[in-house]
Length: 218
Image 1 (cartoon, one colour):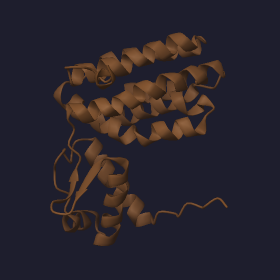
Image 2: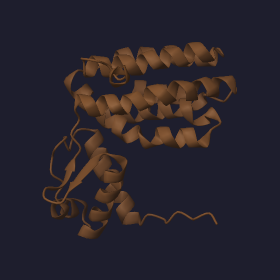
Image 3: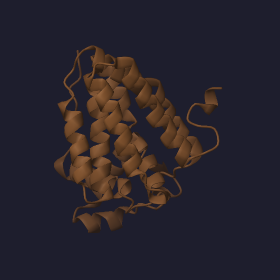
């Protein structure tokens, strides 16, 4: 018998999304302690939804739970970044290749790029960037592949947030996104997949030089 997912209480969901937003926009920085009482006061809730939200965020890789230090924002280093981006390099280009070969609608990807161009802050651009990539891989025809990529979205966004804080590269990435989408819309599945692979690899190599995302497998 298939189990039915247990709904997340609304207050816990609110706190989870609020903490995630603060982490991915740099308001909460890598390594920063996440004190339950302070967060509860900040959000006007009890400690219970904060505690549950932190556990869920630990499950997505954004938060680290320690018996001695409590909860902290995950620290981003070169090894962590390359692990996350290696998964993307292995899975995301293939998902896009299947999306294009299936002739799936890519309107959502174009709309995400428009929102990225219109965004007035890093948070808006980051969200639109994530939506663009998801719109490319989600219609791949393999729900499991889509869910696997969804599982690394938050960690990938954390890596991006840290890298962008040091060296913003929005314009370059926007141009690469447009080129990827153009190839996909033209029906060039292999070309789009190759361009996406190069886009993902070049980002982590610029942000964390010294081996690249695939170095650990060579």
